[in-house]
Length: 233
Image (cartoon, rainbow, N blue to C red; front, side):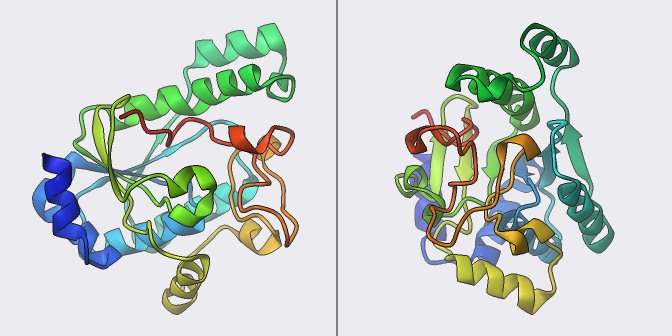
């Protein structure tokens, strides 16, 4: 099986070498999703370093922090890599907001998942369609849900192989890389935001809180995924 072959090929490789492997074997049939978080900034830096042919994209949900747009611009200036923006379907957003108001996601898990689907999941489906490899900045330590994932996975919902080059990196590994290589990053990370999504759905966390406690903080901990990285096998 192709996933087993990839797993064996990259098992002992560095993140840089994993990305080089992907570029060598898949070239422009690979795609990288960035939300401009610190892990994604590491991946972007490495892709630029090897002159990767992978396509880069981001999900412009319409509810991002000003600081996210700031690092987006700095990233374009630093690396000169095209990053395609995918927007939610206008009619779907208009219908949801007209029917339920601009903050319906606070009212129930179902409403929040509807908003995530319209603003993130459906655009993501369009963004990865037709590619063979989806590169992400996921780390196993980011949440309990992600510890059960593998470095290489088959995403049945999107019919694509996912590779997580930083899967075994620690938070300090990421931070050290950013400092050593002077990589631009979102200033919110210095204000207690380890995980940054849409502005209405993200808050800073306290020192003793879980990594993703600031995402959808009003919900039960077990529900704190939007669905982008829930792998259907």
